[in-house]
Figure 1 (cartoon, protein in one colour):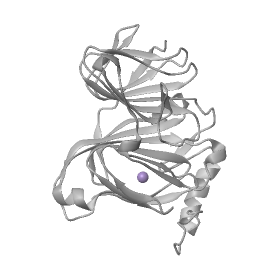
Figure 2 (cartoon, helix red, strand yellow):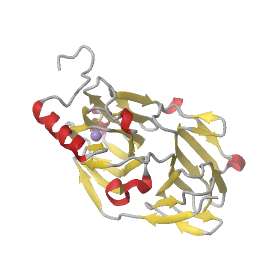
Figure 3 (tube, helix red, strand yellow):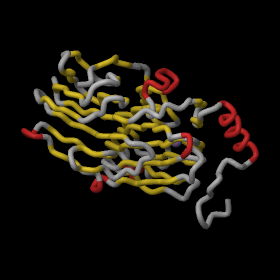
Figure 4 (spheres, protein in one colour):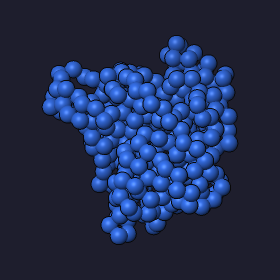
Length: 294
Ligand code: MN
């Protein structure tokens, strides 16, 4: 069994563009290769968008060298990027964007949601790409809620939504570059569940809300904390002390150097400088959308 290695927690909230509050759950700046291949997790909301005619969110910005995974719980985003990918990301949907060699994009609330306003909540996870895939063609995967298997746990204990990888024989829809499991999990108070993880994997759990306890040590883990599990051991077992919602991540680490600066995550400093140079010289977008003039 994997055991709790340590809890990591940040408590200050800040704004990202018009998104507020945003909690930086963890980043590679703090935890380095300990969390490989995961790079960063932000929890946006829960918050309220007041009805507005304006396009609110984050204005156009680049990404290179990794993937952004946006998991929507409440509210609705609209997305358009330089690879031609885009559309609506509604509650329950996941957007898996492989920035790879480079995209420019905006992340804004949809027009319909902006007009009516309301509650929003989402997670954004950054997943590193293996060095050999960092300069690939960008790819956009819209994973609609109805394509994400939701598996009921035994004894009516809750559910596992399988975004990537497999849970039992159920396979999530995301196409990934290295083996990983990404689950959105709900466990009802008092129930004990076991989730699959391989020895040697990086295994992280983020508590979106409420509280649980890891077996066999009974160590507690509550709201907005990241649980970093031991590398050795198979599987994670926990008991929900309250009804709890959490994100479960488990993946083989990449064992490659990380050199990240803002929206670029590469292996070497030279590649970071190249990304900045490419922005200046207009060579950042290597694969424009088909049919575009760019
Ligand atoms: Mn972005």
